[in-house]
Length: 571
Image (tube, rainbow, N blue to C red; front, top):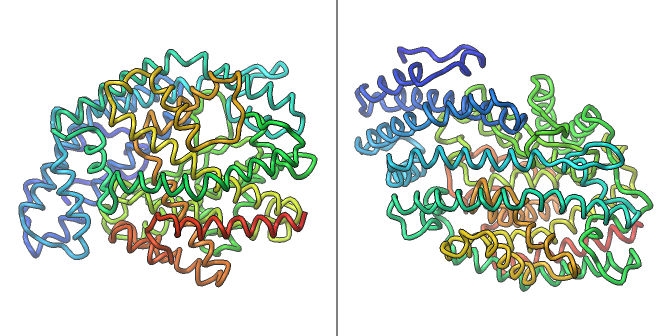
């Protein structure tokens, strides 16, 4: 390529459309034929990688420092000036390749995705995409700004969560009510934001000519292998198979805690042991022990993580004005991942880091693939990307003890593993609730644009999927839980992926019980495929079925209940 890419990160971050445009112009004007297509694709791949990394670095900064006006300005400059022009230029390159009728090797699936993207593209939607991203950033800013006074100290939401695990019930109740009060204080602001987001999304679908926003997003997410009805069938399978088991989990907790009623502040406390699990005291200890555990899973995974520590690719500490949640995103040009989370010393934090390490390992394995279109997070099926993360959590479970370099005594590890498996069982109904809620939202947009009506539907679905907890007198707390679920605001219809992937990961885990090394190798092999094959083949390579029927679900849930009983016997 005649034009030269930036030599380092600082130079990349100074890119404007003036610097980017010549790369697209050269690719657009270059002859494309059987002999040149590989080199043309390689140069396009390199350009897309650099532009993707620029966006990722700017986005990450907005989540690290939500109140920093300069960071917000730089991100907005990108999404207002570079991104719309780049999307239009990308559209031209896709049309050029598709119009050539060339069939590059291993490019059948990327070509199908390009055809879908080309069909979705509307120039009039580019300003709406920018607006949607700004509003999503506003959500992070609102949520990230919530703080609480606890014993004279200012705390963030992640720093409040460990209080919900304390043995003293009055402490848990006080903390839960304080967290809800913080959310209620932002309720009106969040409902106003919701209405704006709905209008933007509905307009995008309308301008594209889709039947509705769900049909539009289905294409955008390349959901070739399942339908909205398949999702609803999965909801029903969860309702039939998992909800009764989740209710039994709550009943056991209630009995062990000696309670008449399970209240919302009772759901996170460990019924075993006198104190909640506190596996580490600082991020250095968290990193070191995580590295040790990964060494036991696969030495190469540990080496990947060590390189992330060495290159400063982790931001793990909680602080004010840091966005909620956790993620791992890839820097596509340098082919390295970055992990973001807010740790508070809990077992959930240790598990979250292992989860994100699964994504990071996936990034490292995909980094070996030549073309961006084969390794890009944009083309990677999220339904399988989460198998990488959830699978890592379960594969790491046997190595949580101190004698393996991990966090716990044998008894603590048993408690941690019980909690992990019970959380998976409890998660499937919550996942079904979130996904069913989003289907209702976009099937009934004239109602759901009103956030107060969304609250009513949320409560109705809560009753269907989440029985067993007494919210009497706490209705405001229940009906506003959806406001804390960032996916609903920032990445609509991204949640079913977690449920599907959890079922895939459970099958990987079941395989590991029979033959651990073979299961890890199958898992690793599947991660290296990137997006060169579809979901059924990705699952099959990992040793799982891409299926969500009651029988497949029951096999995994039964194994979890059996394992929980075995672990409880040790206590």
